[in-house]
Image 1 (cartoon, helix red, strand yellow):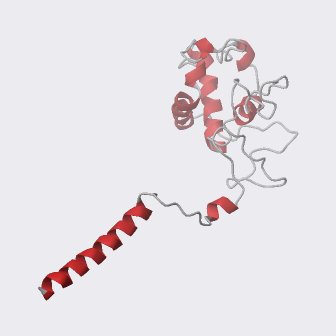
Image 2 (tube, rainbow, N blue to C red):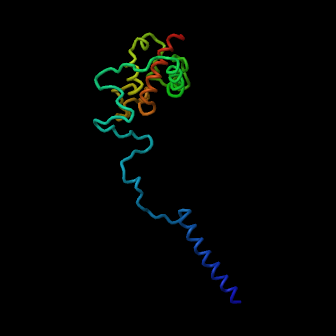
Length: 182
């Protein structure tokens, strides 16, 4: 009889402990506690990120000096064009098409401003630095009344956070080959 009482007490204690653990693990009772991630500046999904601090230098170095047009430091060899082609297919072909002049599923829905024809004489006449700046900074839209904080509003977004400086130059070298295939 004494053994049964002891077992009942042990199982009751274990049941209480298990119940308390389950209450907290399934968030039945929620307690707010300080999380250090909440104490730093951040932004939510679909919110414009904070501006880059003044006079800061990217980890990979300065891409170009402000006020000047950059010069392509990457030779247009087979390796650069191949890398650029892969990056183009990932980041650019969605709107511009595989050949640079196609109407894609995405570009068919763009009504106000269609993506540029990358095989056109107008685009191919631009300097490498101009194309690099467009890839880096996107297409600026000064008349954006819907989203004044967002400068690209449905046009070409800036890819400076998606692609390194070297990768952007590889894409420029690949875009130069699009006119030759036309």
